[in-house]
Image (cartoon, rainbow, N blue to C red):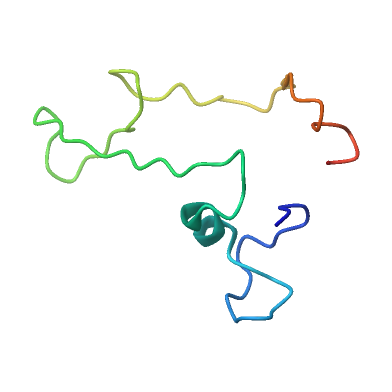
Length: 83
């Protein structure tokens, strides 16, 4: 099964041209993808407040403004054509 042009909010109806990408990943239908569940508890965060759950022990450093990013891959299948 290929993941090119997958609609992430698509139909899960059998035989449908669209599938639910996240469900397919969880089922192991796509090689090279995996499902990661992160959860945790921080008793120092007060009730009604939220905190990012990630490897850091602080708020996730989201970009504060639009910026140009560079994405690198060593996989020969990662091309501008999307294969």
